[in-house]
Each structure stands twice: as C-alpha cells, then as structure tokens.
Length: 313
Image 1 (cartoon, rainbow, N blue to C red):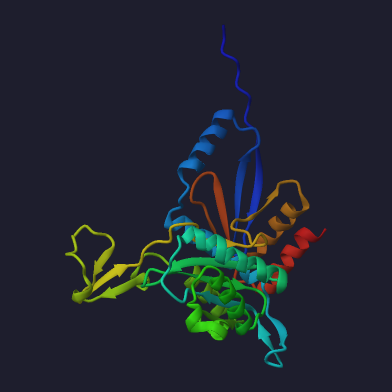
Image 2 (cartoon, rainbow, N blue to C red):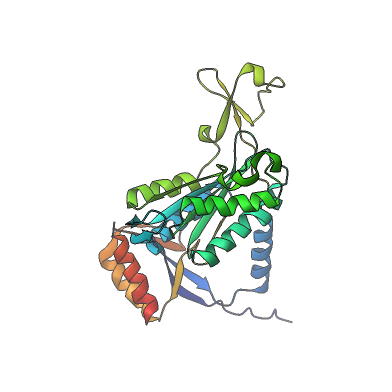
C-alpha cells in the first residue's frame, strides 16, 4: 500500500520591523506536527538564553525605548520648575544584609514597587535589571518614562523595605524614610540614552562585574580552573559577583523584545517594502532563509511616525 502523500508545505513572506533593521523571512503556515513538537521541546530545553541572545534582545529593547520615550517637558511641584526629561534611571538597594532569597525580594519588593509607579505615577514604559553587589546583596536598576521626584521614590521603596524588616526600628524610627537606599537621575540626550541603557542592561561577565580581593580576604587557595576568580596582568585577583538566582530582567508590556511582523499582502507590508528602498544602508544575508535590511541612521521622530503610519489606519 503506497505511503500517504504528505501535505505540501505552504510558506508566506513576512517582514519583521525593528527600529534599526528589518528582517525578511518566510513562515511556514502549515508546519507538520512533529515540527511543532520539536519546536516545543527546543524551547523547554533552552530556558536560559546565551549571552549573545540576551544582548540581542537588550539591543532591541534599547531601540524600542528610544522610540517610545521622546523628549518631553515636565513640571515638578517639588522643584517648582519645568525641565527637559526623557527617562529616569532608578537604582534600588538594600540598607542591610540580605535576609531573603532573590526570588522572594523580586516578588515582595520589586513587583510591588513596579505596580505602585504604574498606578500612582502613570509609568507606561519601563525596563528593570537585577544585579548583585560586592557584598552579595541584590539591587535593581529600573528605567522609567515618567518623572518621579527622588524623595518620593525613596519614600515608597523604604516603606516596602520596612515591611520586610530591613530597618532597625530602634535605630531609624522617624528617619526611616530618609535612609539613603535609592539613587535617581535622568537623561534626555539620545547618545546618553543609548549608552546608559547599554550599561544598565547589557553587562556581561567582565571586570566591570567583579570585586577586587586582597590576599587577606581570600578564604582558600584559588584553583586554576576556578571560573569565579580572575587574575589580571598585574597579578591582582578579582572575584566575580554571585549570579542573580531568579529572573534578572523584565520590561513593561508596552516594550517589545522582538520585531513587529507584517504579512505579505497587507498595506503595512507594502508600505514597509517601499520605505526600505530608500532607507536601507546595507543588506545582510546570513543564510538562505532570511535577509536583513539595516536601516539608515534616521531620526527617532521619523521611526516613531512610521509606526503611527503603519498602525494608525
């Protein structure tokens, strides 16, 4: 008996738009079930992304942040003045030795803080990254698109810290809200924005993420194959900070970590195809299945208008 003829695979052309590039690819519209299974298994196996994949995702986040967060003029009641603002950079720390697991602090410190700034201060777009300090404590970098006075941030963060017992009540009492557990500053220049986002979100295992040790701080001899230590060219010993033992970064739902895909036959696909003809700096073809169109250096306002044009109608 002849084998049952397999169903012919159907492919459809797509364009995936990102602020800095567009990817042309073909998507299988009727993949065989085994392909679905293999894809599912592959996703389960690769739960922890490689550093290259993470950096690519961070680069995409940076691009979207630059589009979604234009320069604005804000008025501060606390400062009684109007000034230019684009993004606020917030660092949240612990005032004493960490007593809880990283995952517990994510759930009972970071997440309540994010919910508060979204509801109380109307924060639409944000990115956060968790790291560890030299003392082993976890701390958080949060980038937001709304101006919030540093005293208010410190006040709310210290209330959450106090609920978890991170303040000595006999020591702080009324001054608990004045404890210096946060750092806040803002930027509005595009160059500064890209540099700051890269610094906060794309750190890898390097000397910038180490703590220098002196011989008297070494508790045991260092083995040559011990990857948690590094000896530089001057013979100085560095110890890599411990990794964060839970989810280490996240973004608001408004920020994409991938591209916006348009199917062939839609007006967005046609619009983008025509736009690429005069706005492509170079084309890359890493394999037979995709082509990458690297955009010319366009202004942020133009790319934002492009998104409005493609989604607005």
